[in-house]
Length: 178
Image (cartoon, rainbow, N blue to C red):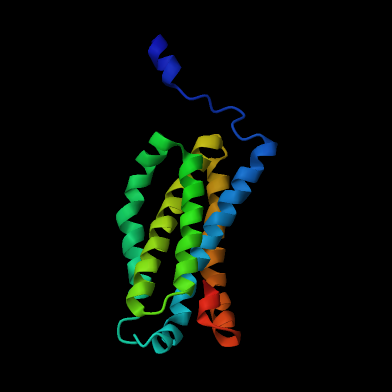
């Protein structure tokens, strides 16, 4: 092993001290929120279609989010290397909040589809960065445990999202889902 090889090896000891578990909790919460956001829309689609008079095209609300998610997800690894993971994930959370707020105020089907696309871009950033950040701050030996916890947040979000959307749609308005 040369000196150059020794310098490029990343030290995996004590990367995530106990006081930094707040970072992990924030990542887990962000993943929970984005999967609730993605899974809740399916339940509200019939009501949204009737309310916005776009019943024949309302499936694009979910599709536009997934297309944007898929198209943009590959970019954020490099962006986070250039601009820093913290800056990108904070901007992503702000973009998700803006996209969902705009979805709640949409007045037509095409507006909703465009705003769901904005949310989809933010969702893709958060999904990609959450796993990258865990890989950065957790030792290789513990990475599986922490990524498993994040995976449980994904499952919980997919489970809870439809129930929350049904509750909001039934009691108040589909707009409150966002």
